[in-house]
View 1 (tube, rainbow, N blue to C red):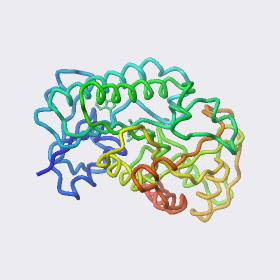
View 2 (view 1 turned 120 degrees about the vertical axis):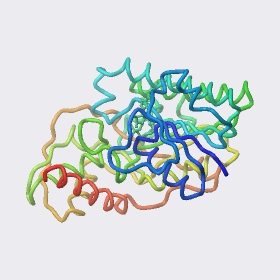
View 3 (view 1 turned 180 degrees about the vertical axis):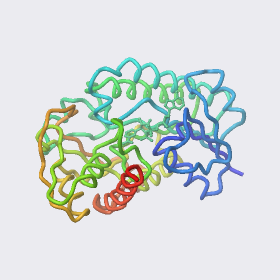
View 4 (view 1 turned 135 degrees about the vertical axis):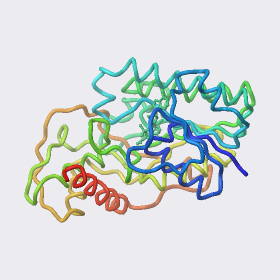
Length: 322
Ligand code: NAD
């Protein structure tokens, strides 16, 4: 039986990944500081523990896993990453996890290792134009991410590549772009724009007002979690060994995102623009490399994923209120 370990299995993407690996017949160990808040885990073995502790990580690697997925990170939405108040935690915690997991995987000769990097590694200077951001993979250097979260991701990308080079390991690195979907954080300050927008729209009556950070003309693309998992598995099992984008190329402004969600909800909304942490002006996935390297790229329209996410967030909101 094929075996996998998912670090960060209590998180959003990790939870979906465990389900998919189970559906494929894997024996799966999940590791996290916490259980997933929204769904029972399907992992065969789920261990609560701290991946910053090297002894604990070594215990988790008690066998030669076929597939190692390293998704654990200290992360959140713009409200967590861009204030500066969490920079030391973000860098220390995530770098320590990556150092520990990769070393343990090496000691146990893991067959394949996957690392989830982020679009946040791209330089601020290629993303100043809302209409024409440049996130082709080779735009990463000269490096100038706009957050310490991005710098840590870039360091860790290089760490995985160095282990691959020096220790002959098989490492795969994806740069995820804004993944969203059901069972993702939707309140509390660490949520991303699509979930936040769904919550705000669900919470107001028809004709109500929602708050949007900045002028709302900043652009982003959002990828539905099912396609993220599909891309992750395809990349993991491919022979492509460089960092590659996993994201959607359907770029929208935040204002447009709000209107799309309102339309799904069947509500008219008024938008009030307020100061808030914004990140770069424009960002979009560039899927030329993933298409040419593994022969696949996400294709599903944003609206489809938003429909599923909106109805899930709406249910959470009413459950909380009840
Ligand atoms: P998430 O926060 O839901 O999941 C991360 C998990 O890591 C959490 O469950 C958390 O408890 C766990 N974790 C943190 N510190 C830990 C520790 N010391 N020991 C054990 N577990 C620990 O995030 P997600 O959205 O599922 O993202 C997964 C990965 O993908 C992260 O590495 C993230 O940086 C990356 N990523 C995500 C997105 C996105 O849009 N969701 C975009 C780019 C990159």
